[in-house]
Amino acid sequence: MRLWTIHPSLLDRTGLVAEWREGLLAQAVLLGKTRGYTQHPQLHRFRRHAHPTAAIGVYLAEVRAEAERRGYNFDASRIVQPPPAEPLATIYTTSGQLEYEWEHLLRKLAVRAPDLHTAHAALPGPTAHPLFTIIPGPIESWERP
Image: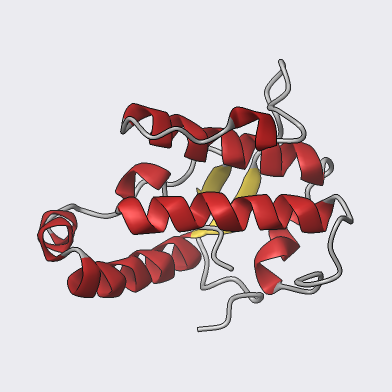
């Protein structure tokens, strides 16, 4: 399971579809609807949030919005708790985590989407998913590099 800190617009088609599928799995775990993946490290930051299911709803809504911008049809009804009307508290994550994920994505793109890799490698760096606020620091302690 990979719940990217980077913005979904930076993912290739394969990555975006996987992010949606894995986000839905994370939602099921957070709702207690599955026995698998309950201790997956990617869920730690969502569990620390005051409203974990709302946070994953906001996360999934942005993934779906990116899919819609690309002309894909991700079923919004699968988001159990849609984003709240009022702004949801952010999840803080570190610059080291964002950079680690960026390098991880670039390695994946070099193999499966070389043209996108070339375009991304020219960028000054990644943007974060809007749920996350980036603060200085190393890779998150829950990450398994």
